[in-house]
Length: 175
Image 1: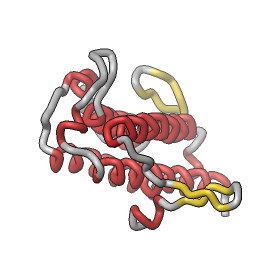
Image 2 (image 1 turned 180 degrees about the vertical axis):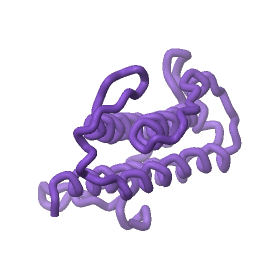
Image 3 (image 1 turned 45 degrees about the horizontal axis):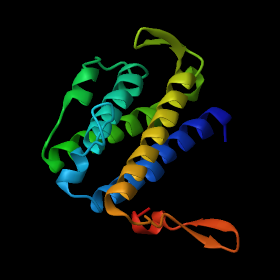
């Protein structure tokens, strides 16, 4: 398999079958109040992070790479205080993940080096995809941490098997 195709397929796997699944598992353990809790005004709640992820991945991949119009209102992602209905929040998040997956699935690996202007920055398609995966992973970690703070529980995404971390989240998340 071509290295560019492997990069795109692995990016899709991280976004749809690892990060999004872990986020959904966190949401299963949280109340609506937990989704909008924030430790202080300088921090974001999980609801804000979900809106932010949806906006970011749409802007960088669906618009910046895929060519759809950019309709992002970034500041609104952080200004929301909820409680936005959980169903609406998940509809936006899941919809954005599905749109990005479709763009990456249909993307010709030959365009990875092509130039794009995204958020006023000159970049290329490979860097845009790499940015989105890294950014999504960082905020997934924040959501996991906030979930642990709010629930006081180990999320049991991994179990120890003689010094090896075995992924348990896959079976819980239907992967």
